[in-house]
Length: 204
Image 1: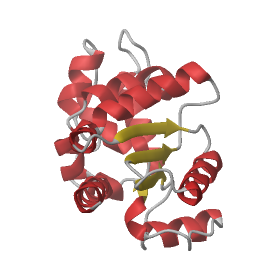
Image 2: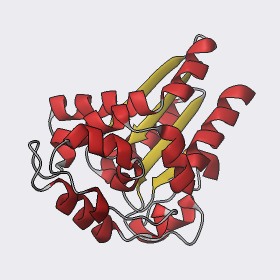
Image 3: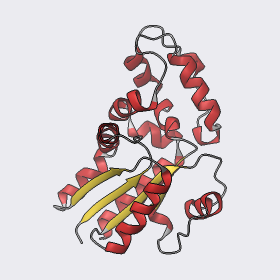
Image 4: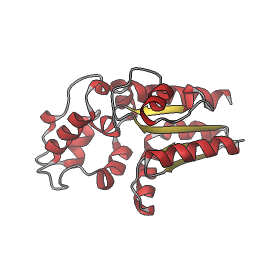
């Protein structure tokens, strides 16, 4: 048992799109990856497409016992008023009794909250005609509804050369660029994930 495996929602149905998102998330999680590699551990991010596939992959990986740390990462899809496990058990009907809270993580309420947390990077990425003032200014982006984040991002990018934000075409590139520290400051669940995985790597 000498590795970290993170099973996440996203990437669509194609091999290439899943690979692109994996590369983006891998870059975003570089501080954790570096700590795992410092222990000569394997490190992998697995983009599973749908959230149910992510859950199935996560559950099967824990049962196999091949890695020291196996984590799940999916969109919350709604406000979170409980632990990640309870939220997913209630919303999705998943039985998560086989794992602990510190390996179940949520992008609250959606991954795009992580992207809009760093407006400077968005401005540089989209360039001319990017409408920065449409982005949510709320410090805690997890209080902003998923639909509101999506609309703000679409409006901000609509007239840029790259065109409106598109999850498959743009998310992987943006994840490589956004400042994970800014994201943690504005998305507490992201900070929780970094802290929990950091501590787990140190303990194991």
